[in-house]
Image 1 (cartoon, rainbow, N blue to C red):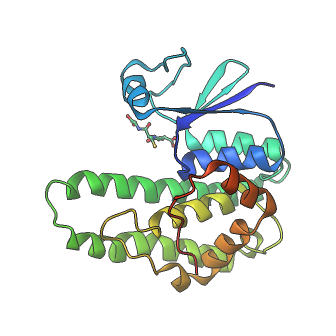
Image 2: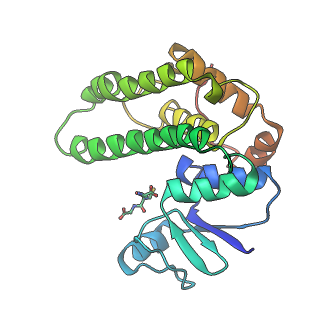
Length: 222
Ligand SMILES: N[C@@H](CCC(=O)N[C@@H](CS)C(=O)NCC(=O)O)C(=O)O
C-alpha cells in the first residue's frame, strides 16, 4: 500500500497523529509537506501542484494508493489501525478514543473561530480570559474524562488519542499563541502524565529529533 500524507511543514496535531502513528509502526509513507503558498492555492483549486486531490480543499489529506482521504479523524483512525494504535476489534474502546480526537477538533475549531474575531475586535488581554474560560474549560472536561476512563490513561497502551493530547497541549502551552499562558499543563495532572509518557516514547523521541526544526518551541508539560 502506498501512502502519502499531505500537510504543511509544521508538527500540528492534525498531521502529527497520522505521521507519528505510521512512523511508530515503521510503515513507510511519503511525508509530503507543501509550502504555504502552494497550500493557499490548493485551498482554491482543490489540487496540489503535483495534482494530488484535496476532496474538501483542506489538509491534512492522506493519499492511499492514489485515493485521497480527507478529515483528520478519518485519517488518524486509518493510520491508527494500520499501526496498532487504535483497536480493530473493540468498538467500545475505539469510540472512547474517538471522543478524544473529536475533542481535539472541538478545541482547534474553538480557537480558530475565536482568532478570527479576536484579531479584529477583541484586544489581546481578552485572550487570557478566553483561554481561562473556554479552552481551560474544555481541557478540564478532557482531564475528567481521562480520570474516570482509566482505559484511556492507564499508562501502558499508546493510542492515537495520546498523540493528539500531547500535540494539542504542546501547541497551546508553547507560547506561540499570544495571550495564552504557558504554565497550565501541571493543573491537569492526568493529561500531563499522558504528555510526558508520549514525549518519552522512543519512536517519538526519534521522530522529533528527525523532523522538528532545531529551534522548535515545544510545549511546556512540566
Ligand atoms: N475538518 C477538517 C478541517 C481541517 C482544516 O481546517 N485544515 C486547515 C489547515 S490546518 C485547512 O485546510 N484550512 C483551509 C480551509 O478550511 O479552507 C479536518 O478535521 O481535517
